[in-house]
Amino acid sequence: MQNLDVISVNIWQILIALANLTILFLLLKKFLFKPVEKILKKREEELNGQYEKANIARQSAEDAKSEYETRLNGAKLKADDIINEATAAANARSEKIVDGAREEADAIVRRAQTQAELEKARAQKEIKDEIVDVSSLLAEKLLEREINADDHKKLIDSFIDKIGEENDIDE
Image 1 (cartoon, one colour):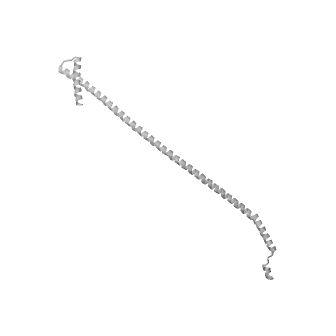
Image 2: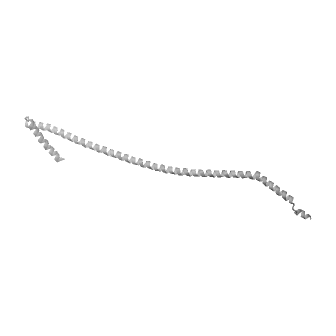
Image 3: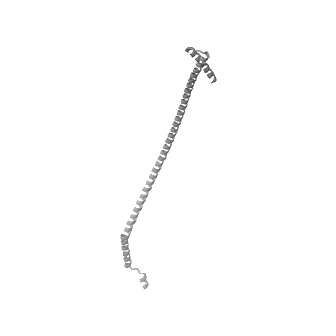
């Protein structure tokens, strides 16, 4: 029956092994499992916190991006408005300068015409005066006598009228 001793089951040994296993399990649970579980929970909370921070940062970045795009569009519109206003102001200023130049040119032409007319009238008066002087000298020499003022005036006026008619025909 020796063979049976090797195969025999000793209940006390099984109970002691079970008790050792239970004690070992309880010790491991108390000293190893709970601290590891706390570390895992802490790590999970840290990861969740990091995920939340990442989500908040992402949302903040998206908000900043949309705000940036809005500001950029506003800046583009404002720049377009400024360019349009500057172009309109430049066009208005150039038109004003051109109008001023036209008015000044017209004024210069009018002054030149007025001055030419005055010069013409002055020249005609000078010529008339010279003609009167020459004609009176000529008349005195021709008549070799002194003529009275009325005769003198009539002679000059008729002479000037004839010269004026000839000038009108020539022009």
